[in-house]
Image 1 (cartoon, rainbow, N blue to C red):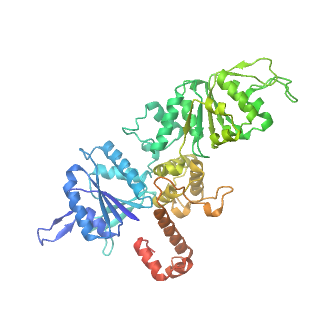
Image 2 (image 1 turned 135 degrees about the vertical axis):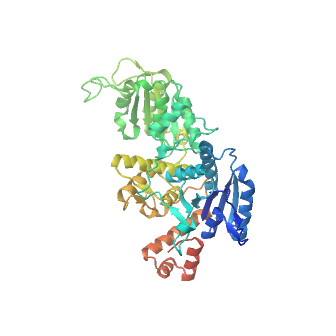
Image 3 (image 1 turned 60 degrees about the vertical axis):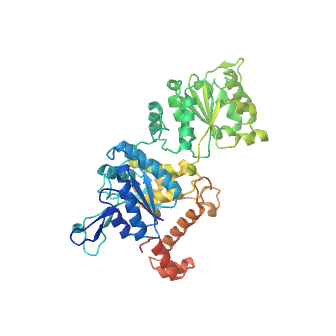
Length: 502
């Protein structure tokens, strides 16, 4: 589905030529005439309302099969950069959810230069995965060529616009992040503006300010629980003492008590000296217990005592030891179910002050492009490279199911950068791997949920299969059609409808 996004301006919809009385199309209609569009979205400021309505009527007359929509942009000052950025971000978030399979194009031939600059920065940074189009003046268009030119920001001639050059966490009226939280997000690389992600982040930030609160982070593998623990650590009054990290899944069962609570010399065979456990090492600061669901039931009782009474008893000790620790725990397991099964203590679960549920990446699809660009920028800095993701690659990443969440996205981005032929990473260059233990047919199935459109997903999947068949048959349409079980006529109609140039 080809979707055109454009402001309207003083030259739209066009003008009557004084010499011959013929209508001369303005910039928007010129773009519409050059390609087949499924949807044209006209961004209209109050001063352009009449021109926008007239432009829409012309589009409907020119292209009856094209849907033309008007988006009101309440900007009193069309040169206000901050206002333009906020409006474009907010409106695109809505549009992309309505058309999740859309291939987006942006015309920078109408509107103010400030609007063009905002479009350019948002597209070049990857925050809006779209291809920019410009209408070239007739005198610069070779005979027989289109006046429409695509702007490819992955070309080396263009300066690299990092996602860090733009705001990582959206700053709007409903997301009034304080300076400390925003700084912590930038330091930890937590990128996103999805409302559910923001709410989880804000909840964690509020809890962090209470030094005696114990916080439970819940989320799927790779969703960002470690990043949230770092945010809490940075915002906690205990921050000066640091944070001790423990991965509970990596500790042998017979060593849990010694590792967490310590032991005295001679407590067991091989205990040749006193050993401080993680609680004592974290005294005065924070202790992050990752994968707390792996704790044996016996150790859970001692952990409960540490949380409730602020004291531990090292193995072989004659008396308990007082400790003051703020505990952050995390798990990808369903602790409520484990409580019902008797494998996790209910009193320990209730002892945590509050829980923070981190949404999986597939629930925050509008964050995927900016997160992918952020991860690639980080990889580029570490490796002295200048890799860039194409608009098509960003669209592919956005529609993928991400069972491994942010951790899987990082792996895909980094592997794709390593094996790319040149600096431009196209959609076909993306390197996906099947999760361990998964069935091949489940590899790229997205998770059904809010905002998911099955027809749009199947349409996108069909397009990718056609492109793959064409690639395998070196662009021979008849052979590609046979490989897909289609007739050549069906293949030709599909390519024409989807504007696939082969």
